[in-house]
Amino acid sequence: MKHYLLVYGKDLGKRDEIKACLDALPEVVSWRFEMPNSFFIQSELNAQKLGDAIHACRNVEYPKYFLVEIPPYDPAKSWGWLVGDSWRFLGRTPKKP
Image 1 (tube, rainbow, N blue to C red):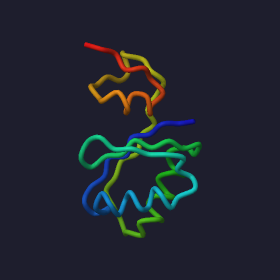
Image 2: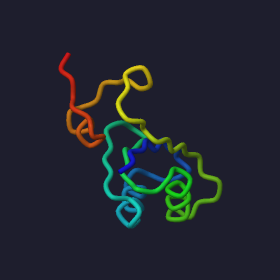
Image 3: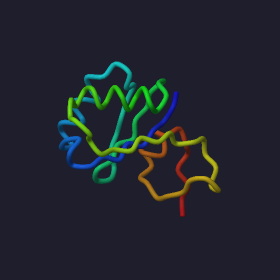
Image 4: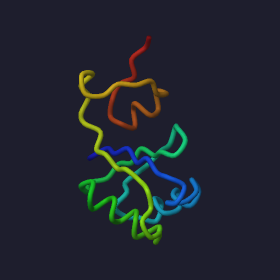
C-alpha cells in the first residue's frame, strides 16, 4: 500500500467535492484529512495514475494540485506533528513528545 499527500488549490474543488471524488474512485483504498487543502490517501497506484484519476474525476481543466508519495518512515526525509489517527493511517506509530 502506498501513502500519498494531496495538496490542492481552490480550482480543484471544495473539500466536499474532493471527498466525493475520492469516495467514487475504486483506485483509492482510503483517505483522511487533518489540515486545510490537503488529504492523505492510500492507493496501490503510482502518483501519476492516481493524480490522473483524481483530475478526471473532478473534470476541471488545469486544476492546481500536488500529489506526492509519502516515503516509509525516516526522520531525515520527513517530519511533522499530526494526531495519532493520521500517523496510524500512514502506517506509523505516533511518538509522544
